[in-house]
Image 1 (tube, rainbow, N blue to C red):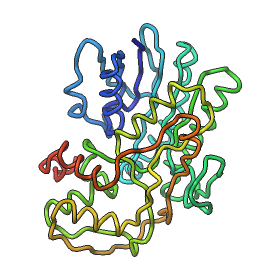
Image 2: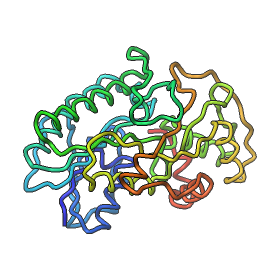
Image 3: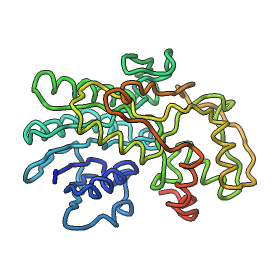
Length: 315
């Protein structure tokens, strides 16, 4: 049995990761300050192998006993959240990552940081391989998230190279499933909420911008495979099945049987026009690739979450 620390463990991806690790027989220490996470996501996990710490990782982190793996997922991740918490987003990426890398060094733990496809910005290379350096506006409104993650990657590699910490970097592309907040501003929970109420689906721009959507179960398999590997350089984890936002909206309407129409709104500043992972590295080094298609994933999301939760009131 390994001891796994999951920062941001009460969030959407973090809670699914905690659940998976417990199911594999590991002890899990979940750290979250509940800025964007929720106790509701982890209430079913409370047993002798699960410990929750309500703590802000930008402050000193104390963990008793041995630690084998640290999954550093903590960060506001949706535009609504990081635009609401710009300074804290930067601090989590910088000081929070520094604190958790210090824990990894002291405990001699394998450290995985959940980075993001946003390090590629509005890419000029398509699809995006890990050796592409990105096209990011550091002073735009999205810069607080993009640059926090880019800095966190640099800090992680510095700890690996200078301090000998056993680290790895996952670049996560758009992921979805149950436990996403209905009003967090991301495309799938927004479209599902609107469709289940037969309200117009709001597509930004002309809807031709693309994303690649990965079901959370596939992502979790990838995160664990990466953490348990000997890879240190960044690895893309996402579904290469690229869809336009208009195609996504139409699929959501079909899956839900909604009577919703599609309406168009102004495109947000620095919104990436394309997003598709090159997962050659994940296939070759981890033997990983996603298995769940968009339509099946949307159906699972609705079944697991239930319509009432998917249209819940904003927090």
